[in-house]
Length: 425
Image 1 (cartoon, rainbow, N blue to C red):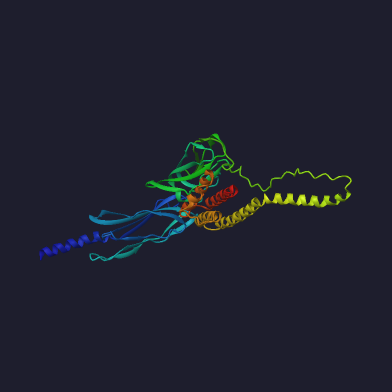
Image 2: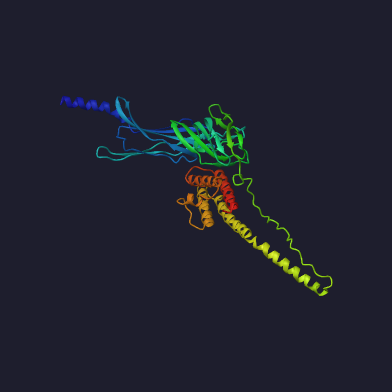
C-alpha cells in the first residue's frame, strides 16, 4: 500500500512535464523582405507522439514563389522528457509588394494501434513586402540576392557557318526561379538561338543557373565576343550591383558560302533577261512588191515562236516561287498562332510546324524518327540551324521559358525554314 502511494505521487509530479505537448510553432527569417528577396518560412511541431507518419499540409502561400524543402525528424529533451519534432522549411520569394498574409498550416498525425492520432493547425502569419528602390540600371533583369557570373565559349575555333556555344553561369543565393536572361550584347547580324535555362542546387541555398546560347558569327578570323553584364539588387546592402564577365574570343576559319550566310540568301524575284534573237530576216527583192505583204505575218510568227521559247524556259521557277510562297504562308500562320499561346505550348507548335513543313516539302510523313534521314541532303549549315530549332522546341515544351524566349525561337525558326525554301532542294 505504501509503495502504491509513492508511485501515485511520482506520477502526479511527472504529469505537468509531459503535459507540455503538441506545440506548433511557425516563424519566418525576415518579416519585411524586399520583393523577390529569399526568405525562409519554418513550421515546427513538437509532440510525445510518434511522428514518423505525420503529414504537414502547407498553406498556399498566395503571392509567393515557393520551394518546399524535405521535412526532417528529430528529438529534443523537454523537462527531462524526450519529445519528437517534425520540421519543414519553405523557401519563399514574394512577387508582389505590401502586406501578404500566410494562411494556417495543418499537421496530421494518423491513428495507429499504439497511439491516438490528432490534427492541429498553426496560427496565421503576415509578411510586409517592400518594393525595390528606384535607380535600377538598364542591365537589371530581376535578380535579388547575392550572385556571381561566369561565361564560357565552346569551341574556341570553328569553321565558317558552324555554331559556337556561349554558356553564362550565374551562381549564388537568391530568386533563381524569377531570374531572367542576362543582357546579351552580341552583334545584331549574328544568328543567336537561346536554350531554356537550367538550375542546379549546389548546397543549402546555393544554386547555379545556366543560360546557353548557340550563335553563328558572320565574319571570319579572330572574333570578339563582348562581355556579359549582369545587374542585381543586394538586400543586405539595399543597393544595386553590377558585375560582368571578361570579353571572350573565337576563331572562325574558312570562307562563307551563299548558303552559310543568312544575309547572302535573298529571294530573287527577277527573271533573267533573255537575249534578243539574232536570226536575220530573209532579204526581199526590191522588184517583188507583193512579197512586202508577207513581212508583217512573218515577223508576227517569228516573235510568237521566240516568246514561246522564252516561256518554256521560265515556268518552273515561277511555279516554284508560287509554291514557296504558299509554304511559307502556312508556316507564318502557324508560328503566328504560337505567339498567342502559353510559351510552353508555343514551343510545341514550333516543333509541329517544323515537321509539317518538312512533310509538305518532301511529300512524306516526317517525325523525330526519320528527321535526320529526310534532311540529310540539306547543306550542313541549314541542317545545323534546323536541328537547333527542333531541339530547342522540344526542350522548351516542359522547361521554364518566357514569352520572349518563345518569340525569339519563332523568329529563328521562320528564318531557317525560309532559307531552306530558297535553297529549292
